[in-house]
Amino acid sequence: MMGGHHAATGAAAWVAVSATAPYALGLYPASPLGVAAGALVCAGAALLPDADHHSATIAHALPPFSGPICRGIGKISGGHRHGTHSILGVLAFTVIAWAVGLLTVTVPELGELAVGSGLFSLILVAFAAKALKFARGGGTLAPWLLSLPLAVGITVFAPTEWYWLPAAVGIGAFVHLLGDALTTGGVPFLWPWVPKPPRWWASTPVLNRCWQPNGYLGAPILGNAGSVREWILLVPISLYAIVGIVEATATGVVGVAPGWVMEAAQRLIEGRPS
Image (cartoon, rainbow, N blue to C red; front, side, top):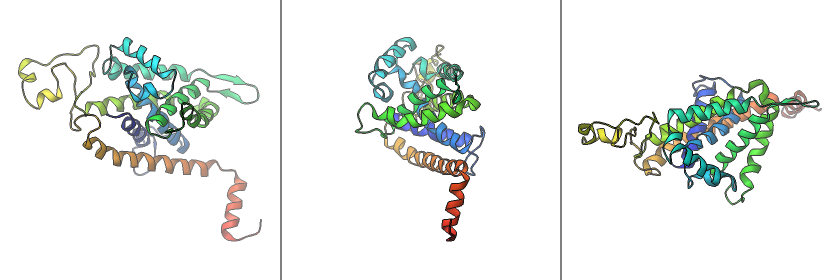
């Protein structure tokens, strides 16, 4: 699956899991702003498994750091679609997010700041901005600048809700695996144990596409990455994510707006003098 599509599915997954709107599942309820911010973080996390590939979207997202880091991760994990594309890889990303989320700093004027969550979110949202073409034509600084305001907000407000970060990262990384499992390459869900199918299975049409001779698993209904079928599937998924983020942002902004702003707006609507 293409990088932008991974990001879109990550955002949609977070909206479905965390939003309490009628069109969502609400399995992990979050505040409206938590839904919007978490969707962007989860979109970036959905790119993390491709950190094992030097040519992936994530490798070019944040130069000059992302390229060397991805090459190093690729060597450690055994190459593309190996360690990072497994349940063990998802758990590793989740544990890293949990550990980073515990890093806080207390500032006398501001109180406790979630520095770890803010920095990690900065990176993930920048990944998402690059993959979703929000930073097109803006140079190398554009992804950083687009993600900075959200990262600052998370740094200030996340200490009381630090637990959302590992959830968003885990969901995003797992959705990436599911997306790749729908393409012809498949994924090694159980890595480092990659059992090979018996000969009769490997020689049987259809079956050998689901449990491949190299041991990878999947249901390649989308065909090759970037296929027309993949684009058709991602249109409604992307629209779902956009609707969820916009609605959550609007609800959150209205909910935190100062009382005098709301009162002034009401007076303006009713035509009353201030």
